[in-house]
Image 1 (tube, rainbow, N blue to C red):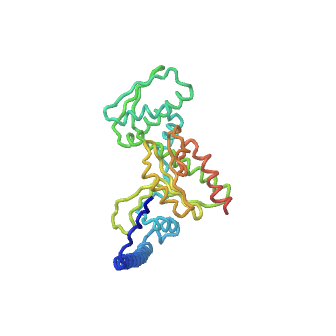
Image 2: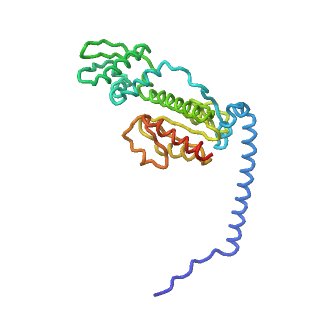
Image 3: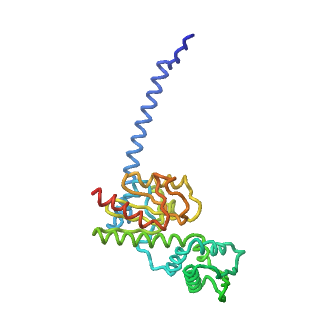
Length: 292
């Protein structure tokens, strides 16, 4: 068998020039990285959220990822929609498809039969309709066997039925779970809602990223996103990697659909809302108590 000829090597001069260029590139990159770090520190030290004790750790955390805080809601305000959201969650398989039809402008009225419903579902559904009426989103006419629902013009209603109801439920579940955990283990926590972030070196006032909930416990951050529709896998994975780069913090996606098999997405965390509390507690125990 004929021997293959050896791969020709680059001429000595050409290889030397390549080595010099690569070395120069590495030196320049190191200088760039050093100057970027100095610039970022200066930006951070001027940041109002970094100056405030309550938000200093959060500002530092997002700055390490190349972002700064534009705005957030520190404490969840009592929502007039909270009762409606929790009722919706209780019978979501039945109620969500009905009210999601109203998101389309062409759907103004629906006749919903009440016969054949389980007593608990029927009672909860009528309570939900009452809650929507009090919000001024619908009006109803009722008989023993049927309820007619007419949608009134309200943009907030469409957003709620499209999926924001799940965000309200998620916030309620997370805050109550953290309160119970903190009380049991005598530790403090902070929760930041609707966190808007911009690139650290950008002067823009519009966000580059918005996050539903960030919870801070000790030196760890837990970022929660709520999904009611199709999961954007690429965006989800990118954010999960970014927010867990410190190997302590977690990015958790909460979904309303319980039929999605969470194990298919491991090591990324997908948690149905109905199982959020039962999965959060052992996770927090493992992160904050057992590893102390």
